[in-house]
Image (cartoon, rainbow, N blue to C red; front, side, top):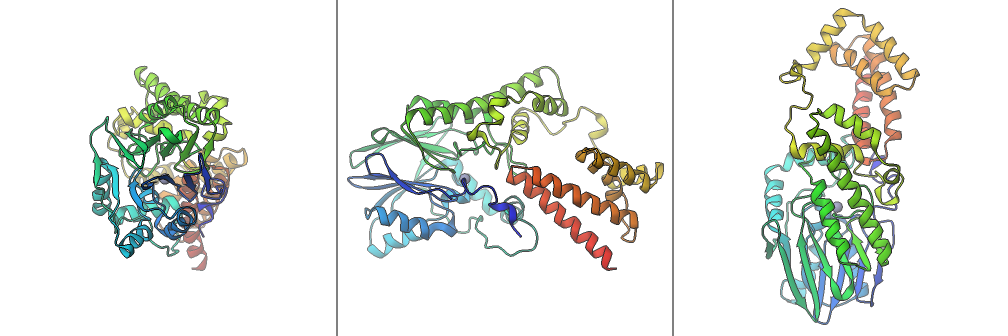
Amino acid sequence: MIRRTTEGMSDWFGMFPSETFGDGTCHFIAGMANTAVIETNNGLVLFDLPIRQFARKTFKQVRDRTKKQVKYIIYSHGHFDHAFGFAPFIEEIKKKGLNMPEIIAHENCIRRFEKYQMLREYHNWINKMQFASVKGRRQENLVSAQEILEPTIILKGNDATYNFELGGTHFEIYHDKGETDDSIWLWVPEKKTICAGDLFVSSFPNVGNPYKVQRYPRDWAIAMDKMIEKDAMYLAPGHGPLIKGKEKVRDALSITSEAMHFVHDEVVKRLNEGKWFEQIFHEMMEIYPEKFKNHKMLRPMYGCYQFAIHAAHRLYHGWYNSGNPTDLYPSKSEDIAKEFLKVNSEETYLNHARNLYKHGKLQLALHLLDIIVIGRTDSNSRVLLEALKLKYEILRKKSTQETSHIAANIIDNAAYQIKLKFKGMEEK
Ligand SMILES: [Zn+2]
């Protein structure tokens, strides 16, 4: 059951056409993440590789369009959907006895690969939750970095750039932080083309991912501002279809940059006003402009505005979020819930939760239910069974309202665990 993985995202996860564009020497190979190919008189430059599982499909699509030798591979960043699908390209090079291509990446990409080794089991666990489910279904491990094609040309430092020429075509590579600290993007002036990697994803940027390390909303906006200056005709995003036409490219980059600047600057303003996270978050929810809410390029399919508020806040703030010293070293939530159950009966909390649910206050109902769900540790309680069933129902309802597939997966997976628990209780 991995319902959420692609549902509603078909126009985003590679369900749009690959195409040859520009003067007929540029190829956009659509995938779960996209690969861009630039032909020159002296071979090919590949910007990004597909996810390992789709490597052969992408390879075939490239080879249907051009037989030229691969001379450079550029990793927009070291995520599994951009740097791991190299096998068929390298097999071909070895079979033909050709020279290996140069592999270009930022130095933080090397650190990323080292981190993937160090945190292998942890990443397997969180990625299962983020991308699909923890529902016991066996899935091929696509995201771990067991095999890596090592970079040979490494951009160093914060303002790193790297330029090269191949077969009369010029390639300008820039490093900017955004989704990751190792992102690089490509400008090909002769082809009027930007390859953005995940610095542009045709939806609300994946900034503030609940499972992942810090991401960079302000740097992300600055990266897009730099892209706008290129006045490009084509924009190849990391995810989503190729964007064609100067005006469309400019509009797509501008609105997304504006949204990132907005989140960052409004959070910073509130930090300077001495506000704590809860107040900042709820105020931010009140002021989110309509023009962002309904914009095609800012659909919250993966990342979303709520996550972005967290990202901006975490850039400058530590883990003490509430300003309430009760929360500095809190008691176990189970112990707190047990105390609440001494004050009032389980039935009182359950009935109150039902009432809140009836009036559409789903989130508040969950908080009330948790007093029973967390506080009752025995498995023969009828009220606990009822509370679990209601929590399941509420989570399922919330999940259908979520457009971000990360948020929906978090809720769905938790709902499934709750279902297992009450089914087990019913069987007793
Ligand atoms: Zn990606």
